[in-house]
Amino acid sequence: MRTCLFDDMIGGHHGSYLFGLSRAAIQASQNLVIASPLEPDTNEADWFRVPVGERSAVLRGRRSLRAVTSTCRDQGVDLFVDLNLDKNIWLIPRSLEQINRRFHVLHQTHQYRFEGRTASGRIRTLALRTILRRLADRGAQVVVHTPRAFATLQAILPRESIVKLGYPIRPVMAADESDSGETEPSRPSVLFVGQARHEKGLSDLLEAASRLPEAAIIRIVGQQRPDVRQELSSRFTAVPVEWIDRFVSEAELENQYRAASLIATPYRTSFGRDGGASGVLLETLAHGKPALTTETLRDQLPAEYGGAVVVPAEDITAISEGLSRALHTLPAFTKASSKEGPAFIGRNHTFESYVARLAGETSVK
Image 1: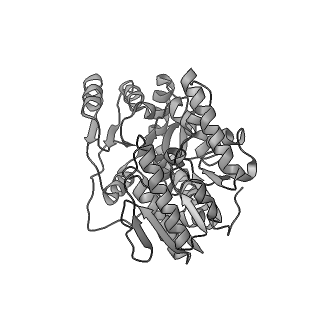
Image 2: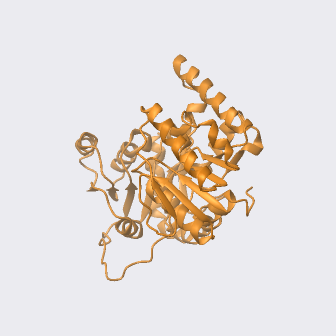
Image 3: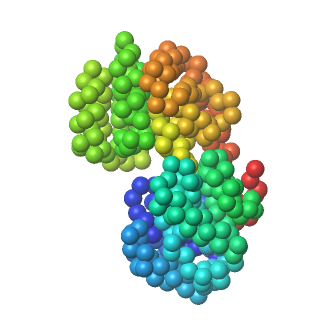
């Protein structure tokens, strides 16, 4: 099978997602072509560089995707995987239909919902739905990663045009005994990973922690906007916060997960409306760590999962009580999460199973 993986974006999850899939495809003996601005970390695939895509440069993006399509046709590609339909929905040429099997990965689905949209936004939603139906009518399949996104598309497309797959995450790295990493504090530590965007609820977590008589250390890992960090630091002076305000390597992030007592994903309702998967929550499960999360992410947890405290989103009292309960019963939550979390990830969120499904080798329920 000759497969092409296409993603013309850089930054964020794009590199780890693309290269994780490429390694799995090569391991599965697929004959692989990668079309990306990012040079692969393997020489076992054919790579051709494409320019970085910009959402505002529609005409240039169409030309680029036409060139990718032409190259795929010339190289005998029979499976094409577009890893970023969120942007590429406006760019897809009819010539792509010459490739036998076509998958388009949609990470977020809020633009396909009418709820909360302005008048102009609803017109845009109608246009997007029309394009999506046209793709499905012409044999393409759309991949989504969450139950919420799947439900959104079910109202638009026939079931056979939708593929629901667990978002794949990188395997947990083995601990490096030569790297001492972070020293575990004498009191529990709560880890928050990523940028403090509004929908991720960091301010809710800090306010909840400020209500506890003996707050745990809140460790925030990831590069932040200076104004956001300043605002949060000035508001929550009584909360013991450790900022690791920079890009961290995968190895360092692994150490942070291992050192944490509890991982917090206090995401707000707006995150759930986007329909996207939470990589941090999935990495928490993979590491077997207990979690404090909100109802927004409940449908991304295993059924009857014993390793998390789930509270209503944006409810500071509930988040504070949940945080207190989690910290006071850490041994029980840690025991459950260490057993149930990695097993769930192994069944549902590997790059190998993702690639196998796209190649038609397995079924998904």
